Each structure stands twice: as C-alpha cells, then as structure tokens.
Amino acid sequence: MGQFRFLSAGESHGRGLTALVEGIPAGVPISEDYIQTDLARRQRGYGRGGRMEIERDRAEITSGVRHGLTMGSPISMLIWNRDWETGGDPDKVAWTDVMSTTPTTVEYNRITRLRPGHADTPGISKYQQNDARNILERSSARESAARVAAGALARGMLESFGIEIHSQVLGIGGVHARRVERPDWSQVEESRVRCADAEAEEQMVAAIDAASEAGDSLGGVIEVVATGVPVGLGTHIQWDRKLSTRLAAAVMSINAVKGVEFGAGFAQAEIRGSEVHDVILPVDEWPRGEDGEWVRPWPRRSNNSGGLEGGMTTGEPLVVRAMVKPIATIKNPLPSVNLETGELVQAHYERSDITFVPTCGVIGEAMVGIVLADAILEKFGGDHIDETVRNWRAFMKTVGPAHRVEG
Image 1 (spheres, rainbow, N blue to C red):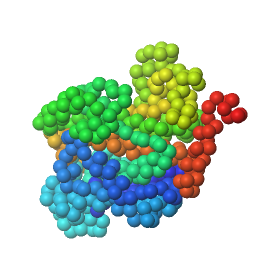
Image 2 (cartoon, rainbow, N blue to C red):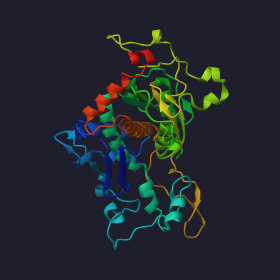
Image 3 (cartoon, rainbow, N blue to C red):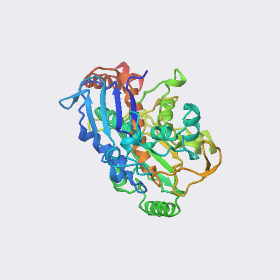
C-alpha cells in the first residue's frame, strides 16, 4: 500500500459521498473552505448539465483535523447530495425512495435500456443485476467530487514543497487550442472551458452549443502540469512502482478517459532520438535564485519527456495529457437493447452534461496531486509535515554535481 491513499463511497443520487484519506502527516493546515475552492472549480465549465445548478458541493470534515491542522490520523469527509433531498428520477419518484438503503414499497421503473459506452452492460452482467441503476449510480462521474476533495488535501500538503498543479483544456469536439508554453493560469480559471486560447475558447463553446442542439455529446483533451516537483520521485526498480505507471493509472481511472501521454507523447514516435531526448545543461547555464543557489539541479533544454525518465521525476515540470471520450449518456439516444429481452430499444437517457472535459482537468489535478503526495511521503517520510520538509531540504542539498556533494 502507498503512504497516501484514499477510498470513496456513495452513489450519484444517494444520500451523499464519503472520502476517507490516510497518510497525510500531522501539522498540515486544512479547512473546509480550502477544499471548497477545488470543489467549486469542479462544478464549473461550459456544457455542464442541470445537476450543477442543484448541487453546492461542500466537504464536511468529520475526523482527522483539529483546530485547522491535520493530526496524522485518517481524515474522513462527507459531501451531501442536495438532489437526493429535493429531486426525483425521470418518473418523478423521489430519490429518497428510489435510492433508499432499506426496502421500499414505492413503485419505480427499473432501468433496462442499456447505454452503449457506459458501464451498464458489463456491470449488470458481472453483478447479475436486473436494474442498471445499480451500476450507473456508482459508475457516475458524480463520484469524482470525492476524488477532488481528497486531491485538495494532497494539494494542501504539496504546497509545503512549493509544488503547484494546474490544468488546461487543449481541445473539445475537434477544436484545438494553440499551444501556449507558459499559460496564464488565472486566465485559464476565468475561461468557460479552461482554455488559454481565447479564440479557440469561442470555437469550443460554439461546438458545445451545436452538440447540445443535436442532442449529442463531445470529448476532448486535457493537460495537467505540476511545477516545483523535485528530481528523484518514483523508482525504476519495479514496474508497478514507477511514477509513470502510477500517474498513468490514476489519470486513466477518471471517467471517460481513454488515453494518457506524457510530455511530447505519441508525437515522439514520428521523430528521431536526437530530436526527442532532453539535453542536460552544463552547470554554468543552470538557473539560479537571488541567493546564487540553483533553482533546480540538472535542468534541460527541453521537456519532451514531460518531467519523467525511467519512471522517476527529472525536476522539470510534470506534464500529463489525457484524452476524454464523449459522454455516453446522450440526449438523442443511440439504438440499444433491453437487458431482459435483448430486443431493440433506444438507450436510457438521464439528465447529463454535453461535455465535462473542463471538469476532467480539475479531476486530473486531484489524481496527479494524490500520486505526487504519495511519492513525496514515500521518498521523504515523516509523521509531521515539518519532519517531511526537513528531509526534503536535506536531500535537495545533496543533488547536483559530485564535487558539490563531496564538498
């Protein structure tokens, strides 16, 4: 098991979501308001559905934090679903009845029309269910609210090491943004689709509007960038301990993500090694701070590797991109089959987004943050954050040319 780990529980239209986080050292400042910032960012984005007009997500901390500081014990959080109390299913039966944890005499319609592209078909087969709601409620992207809450705890810990994590949208529905080497992250946060390219943003919005009018959905590409990451996180020793393995798995676990790449990604397959590999700068070209100390050791001329070599961080910005497929719940449903009879029907439709690509960026930040927090604790240990920071600083003083270490 990792040093930092989390579990989530809950259904999309159930009473609420639970997140249980273990491994954060004592002494990390955390508040519900701090977590709320990321939960609010998750809810924004052009193309989101009516659910976002109902929910006002807030994580209620129920353990592990005292007087605004973590205690080193597990942290539990609850995110209540407002829709559970105020809404109902498409047949106007209250969610409190449809999703009751105890037997109910209230009649409601089972979901028997399977949705292509969703977890419905393999889920009802694996768990031998006659109601696809038992699958879709947990496989819903609503679960990502718990991930973002857990990721906010990781972000709070990573701030002690000067690590920042941001995300941007590079494409939606075939509209691609111009690559901006150093995005203005405040501008990205203001963008309706989390895009640094204002012209592309307008085209993305138009594409979303067109898909909405057609009763369809759109996918796209997100990019997560982590800066301030120290060299040497992860390891080359075993396949499953490589940081590239762990990051890819974490980002691939996000709903609708079907592909992950680092740095220059798949484009590297088309060019020669001499153009791909990131040349290391000689020491007299290393960037230095006002105190004359190196800003970071072993800097590169480029970052095609995305900050990862041999499953370990290089000290360059960590760059992860993910391809998000179009949402499987479509207003103009695809042909499908009835799970009881196998006969032709139209797939089930339930209130949904047109796209949640911008939201996936925020979820991606959370998942990258969780992996980095785990890697920091794995490398530097510590039961109190001050101890972890001391260990990190001591390590960084040893990194560089051998003459520096020996002296």
